[in-house]
Image (tube, rainbow, N blue to C red; front, side, top):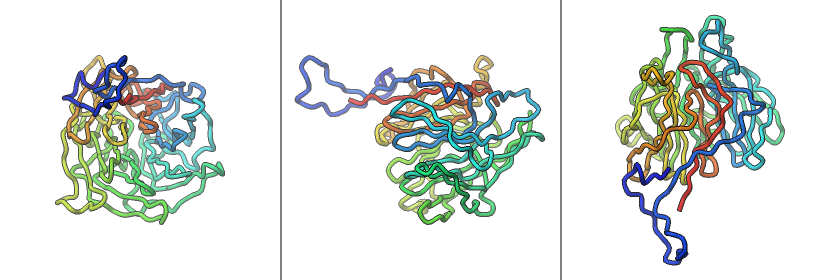
Length: 354
């Protein structure tokens, strides 16, 4: 699948010493790569995802047998890691508290859980928890951190990392897991300095969002898509915040080119050292044949501020969080039905550069 088939020209410099037997490469290309099923073939959905240079981590989520017809869908304390070097899965010590829609990130040799939604599902309501924990990768142990400041607890936030700081944008305080149930969406944006252990409030999003995607390119925080108070209310916005001077513009945030397909519960990642942001799958598809799930693969060219469509995902899903590493966007698990429908599918969108 060539980006040149769907994007305006993306010409790259060609060395004069290019081999005469091989045509010069003028376009970046993308391809999907199937990877080993999630550990033990056990499905996962609505988890947090984090990445280091060597591993992809999955945290929390809903039970592997969850469905839209269960009386209760509890949160879980599941914690697993995939080795990028060995291609193998490992079960790790469970999170001290069960979460779904987990806000998770890795910084250095530690994996952080910064709140999420929690509950046993008995009343079909997930509520925000501000409990925070850190996992020391070398020691293999969890430790509790001070909770989020009052009024900041939420799950389903868009999460991204720059240096030692973790950014959380939007999210939700309450999700009623039943038809017509209330879903709150937030404009709150905060930053957690892992070195200092402090929280900072940043300019609020221009409108409420949960189940959005986030990425950091350079010193800009991008928030893509998401929804506003329910699965049908999906959005296609692309917003950026200059992290070097977050209050420079009125409101702080700048609108960029809109994503072609509005969707929530999408997976978002960065490719080409920040050249591209990929937006994959999602929930809220009104097509009756789609089971409510999008199969769209769309890529944002950061320099040109343009979006383009690529051929569809081979395994459409929603309700997962992607992780970026080694010029791939890794997409673990997710749901194949609107609401609950977890799978053990694991694949990645890979950039093949000239």
